[in-house]
Length: 120
Figure 1 (spheres, rainbow, N blue to C red):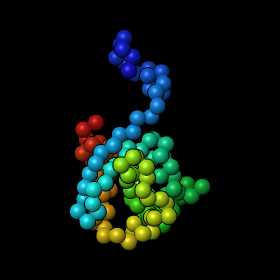
Figure 2: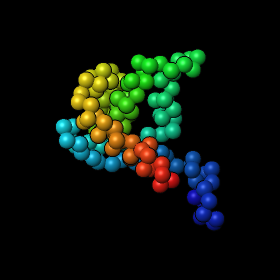
Figure 3: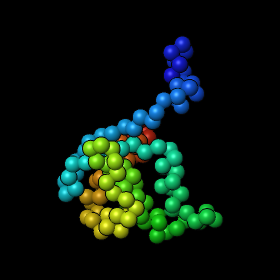
Figure 4: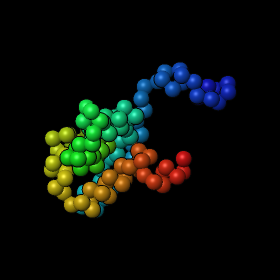
């Protein structure tokens, strides 16, 4: 924000390094974990993987979307991803309720849940 008029400026927005937001959480059956915010570009890349080059939905990729979101958001204490794209099939084999609870925590932190949308 520009201190003179309290409005954002290009320099105030882009003139500093990215500051990730983190939150620690815990889900029964999964354990304690850290959530990292994702950038708009990361969100676009995650969404893009659901479509072919021609823009048609890829059903198999769409079914993996939540697992890929978990991969992007769940990090270690230092903020480094602990899962990779190669882990997606294994994540999809875990208990659905547990994974849905982790996804809900990640969605809330990243502002993608319905309650966060309503607040804004």
